[in-house]
Picture (cartoon, rainbow, N blue to C red):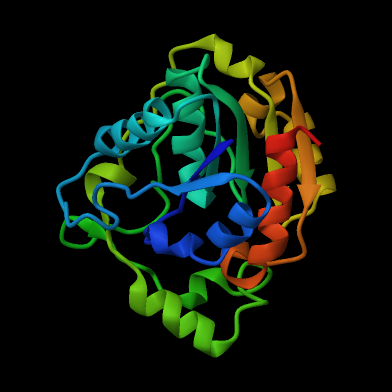
Length: 228
């Protein structure tokens, strides 16, 4: 099965470089998605441009697909399910949550000169980055691509209630499945509270398991694709 991989803020498709071969070894076809404004040299890209790129990747797959979103890109994965509910067989969310209709894509970081630059590691101290050594931190920061303002401040629009029928796997890195369940039950993640099939799985990592636990992440995603 095709597994579309969408990296979060500041990351391009190379973020999945160690996950891709592991997924291939497990019998799947991983497809890292290059997002406009995050790897293709389009600083004026919008949230609609990014969504169109993801939907095009969904449409290009020969059959149904699993769409994986990491961090803020969980929004794009959920939007893809909303736009193509007959084509997306499962959504896997890694370290993030689906937005509600009208929410901003990533309104929680500062804009500077029309882009959202990587804010530095002080913003991610604690469980988010505890498993990243200094070399990993330097590598991620050096490769970080500023996110266009029209992406970060873009409004999410959800239109098709059939998205709630699509099974969701929430991969919990810097938070636990128990914490995620509390947030869902408390109504803090309305889209997951409304989804009919939600599975919570744990991974012992910080916010970027594609760098620190790529083989384990690949196994979890492959299991999700197989319906395990």
